[in-house]
Length: 242
Ligand SMILES: C[S@@+](CC[C@H](N)C(=O)[O-])C[C@H]1O[C@@H](n2cnc3c(N)ncnc32)[C@H](O)[C@@H]1O
Image (cartoon, rainbow, N blue to C red; front, side, top):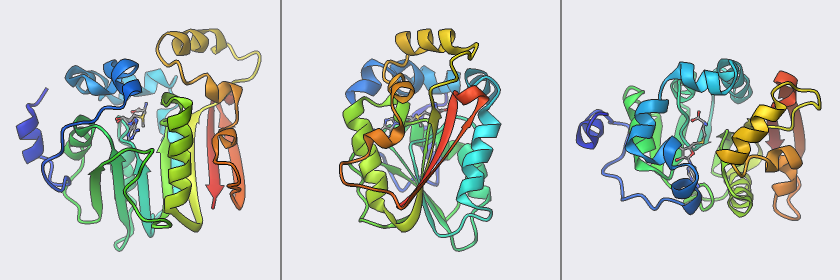
């Protein structure tokens, strides 16, 4: 693990020193081993491992998210939460000259890790913030990406995250969600994934038992909803147009 001071020096995408983390309870109690503990980043920041966790689907799922955001990616894009692997570096490479990408994450360690994976780029800003209370004006982005975030959040936080994503995207803009989904009844990985969720990811079953749309704020109706599933239904991409 590189000491934080060297990471800060190697991290010109960060606007300045980061505030001490206000770690949400579920991250601290349930996901400390994946994102919060200093050794977590060192351990999980390996693409082959993330790909293994997703049964070989990491690139395919990233490709699906990126295709939805455009090539080149134009306008203002918000990625809510950092992701291990090369998703965000690939997103940066697709930015049109005048485009902007903001990435918000609540954990300084995750922002530093992402900064260390990308070159300096004036179009990109890494921001510390909570997905359930974004510090951005209404309708300030053309598109918002949530990649495997919602399944990690307890229901009230998930609801707030979705409400915020739909608040900050402009009318006609897209919220792109890639996450777990209820697999087909005969899916051979159902029993294994049930155990994984039971022991490691206790909020993830919500995405098997409900549609993501069930967690939208009352009265919020996207202009259109497009859903695709992959790998026997274990993964989904949902595109909500506000
Ligand atoms: C996007 S999710 C899972 C991504 C995926 N499993 C991967 O390959 O990395 C993990 C990220 O979400 C961030 N996160 C979790 N809750 C958050 C919140 N309330 N606000 C902002 N970021 C959050 C964590 O700090 C972590 O960096």
